[in-house]
Image (cartoon, rainbow, N blue to C red; front, side, top):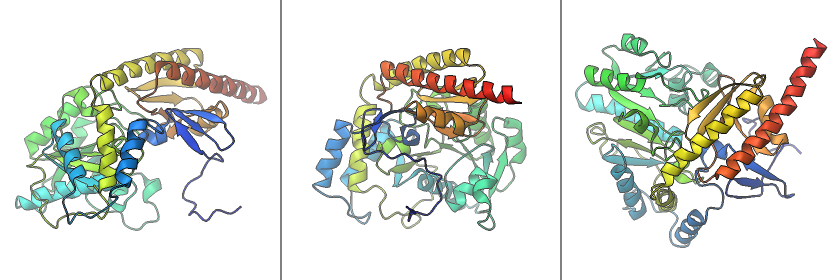
Length: 399
C-alpha cells in the first residue's frame, strides 16, 4: 500500500502497538528491547505509571489555553528547572529545534539590546546537529541537510570540534556566541577533549561572548548528571533542552541567565502551544522521578555497568566493534561495519539501536532500564555481532 506520508524517512518495516518499561511490542506480540529510547526521548520508558497518571489527570481538566494567560503548570516547571540549574529564566517550546531557535535569537538579541546589533554571528562545530529548521541546519552545517533549500541562513562560523585555537581564530567583531553540544549525539557520541568546554567558557568570558549549550540529547539525567555540562563544572549562559524533559510528550525549552535573556522582552518571541498545561504537567511528572533522591546516581551506576558490558562486546567482536564511547546512559559503538547493517542485525535479534555519524550506533535507553535488562540488551547485541561476523567472513572468503 502506498503511504500518504511525505517520504522524508526511510522507515523500517516494523510498527509497535504498545510499550512497557524498556520494551516495545508489535500488534502480533513480538517484543523488542529498546536501547534507542525513541532517540533519547523515552527517558522514563513506556507507560510509566506516574507519567500516565499526570497526563490523564491533566487531560481531564485542561489541555490548552494560550500564553496570553498564566499557566500554573508551566510556572512550576520553570521554577524547578531554575532551582536545579544555572538559569534564572525559562522559555517553553515544543521541540529541540524550536528550543535552539529561541536560544539563537536570545543570544543575538542580547547584543542588540546592549547596543551592538552587528554582533550576530555564532561559532559552531563540525559534526554538530541542532535540528532541522532553517536556522538550525545552518548552525549544524551538514551539507546533506542544507542542500536544495536555497541560501543557508547566514551568521554561523563552523570550526573543528575540540579545537579551541580554531574557535579563537574564528572570532570577529561580529561574533555573538559559541554554540556547542557537550557531547555530540548525532555526530557519533563524540566526547569533548579535556579542557575544551572549560576553555570555551574562559574564551567567551574574555571576549564578551555568550556560551550556548545544546543539551537536547544530553540533558535530563541522560549522562548521569541532570545536565551533561555538570561533569565538566561549566555553566552556559543559555541552554536548550528537549527530548527527555517530556518523556515522550512534545516539550522543549531554553534556559538562560537573567543577563543573557535581557533582550527577550514582551513580543520578541512566542509560541502557540509551547508550555501549555498538558505538556508542562507531563514535564513536571518527569522531574518528579528524575529529581527524586538517588535516581540520577543510579543512572550513573547503570551507565558504568553498560560501558563495562559494551567493552566486553568490543573484546569479543573486534571485527565488528572498534571503540566504545559515551557517558552514563548515552553510549556509542564505533563500528567496522555500517551502522545501518548493525541496526538491522539488532532488529533481527529484537534489540533496537540508533545509527549516528562517524560510523557509530547510539545506545540511549530509557533511564529506568535495570542492570538485568542491560545484560539482556548486550546479550542480544552479541547475537547481532555473531551474525555480522559470519557475514563479514563470508564476504572476505568471496573476495
